Length: 331
Image 1 (tube, helix red, strand yellow):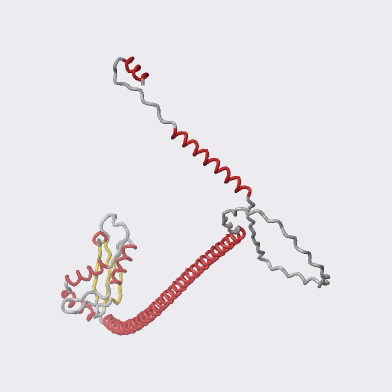
Image 2 (image 1 turned 135 degrees about the vertical axis):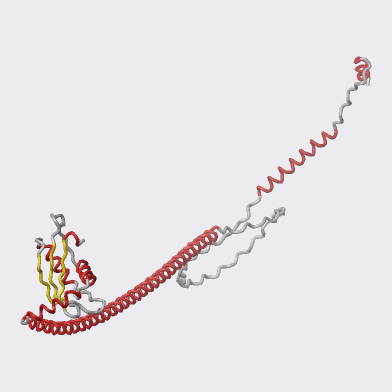
């Protein structure tokens, strides 16, 4: 107390004070308690380690079947011995029983390994079955696709065969129609040729008859000069210039002369044409030559092509007509 006062006086009258010293008895009690607990823990640990461990038994089963051993031969019964008198054991001191310890479960490692192996085999088997199932599905799908492709190919082949058969039938039908048409055409042409031949034959017979009659008339006129002269005199004034012009025009249209017309002068050829009352040309006789044989032949061919010759307006013809053609007037 006196020291505190002295300190306060030494500071010079300030309000600072030194705290009082703490009480030591709680610390001492805490230290004693901790040491007591440590001692008790050591005693209990020593007593627990001195106890014998509890024995644990485990049975191991073999999955394989073992054959039982043959029974042992009978042994002779031992002679009875006098039972020894039990000695009275000395009294054992009473020891405190340790607390019951739970028995550990037997190890199941073999069972777990077998179970794992079994599960692994089952998983492999399941995977193999799934793989086989997928392969079967793929094979079935492939067979179905092949079946569909085969059906489509057969259908297409049938359609192609049908088309070929139809095309062949159509071609045969067209060929048959063509043959019939050709036969009809040939028959028609044959009939036309026969009819034309008959007509030509009839016309030729008629022309022969008229020619013979005309030749007889001409021959009879040649024996009587006076009658011929009177006929010529009587027919000469009646020649129609338009009639002669129409005959010349037709002959020019049927005459084709490919030669050159670049020659001096204008050469002329004259023909005497005898015809029947029908206009058919009976004979052609050259009375004057142009001096160009090719031109004369071309005009003669044109005259023959022009048969029958045109008639007069009244339907009659001149039995003898003289026609002349100049080279440069044929174009």
